[in-house]
Length: 184
Image (tube, rainbow, N blue to C red):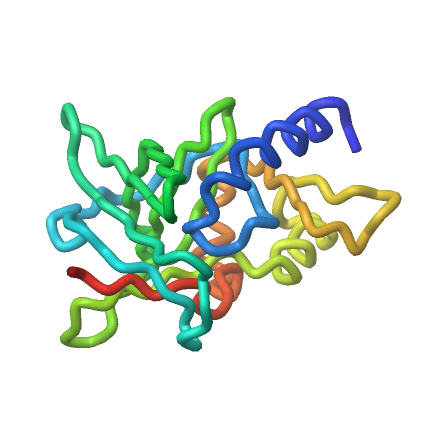
């Protein structure tokens, strides 16, 4: 792994452990996604977070999405642990993405979609194998530990325009649902 990727991996473990809401913990990005703006109004409010299969998350998890000083913010609480991060909503083709700024130049992007006619928001993180395939195939810039190809952490270095193009070309980059949020 390059020195930059090693630094990102170390920093990622510090922030990802405290903020696992947006699905896949294994794929992080070094660039924000650029696309069409999305009206945040339907996303605002307090949400209960659950696994798609109804499995146990341990202590209850709640998320609050709000606008603060003109910026989208997400606060996630589980027990006594409360973490808040800046966020952005972006539209790439038919895909709506919610991005968290984890700080230190690291982003987490997830696909979000409302279930038809409901107050449930389905969050799908990046599919680790699909992202690895894109990197190994050369269509997406990124790093996988060359010694451990089974590595559970991938750093995507693709520039914003390339990332948007890959999302349009390969909608399977975002896998099956990771979480379901229900508006309270």
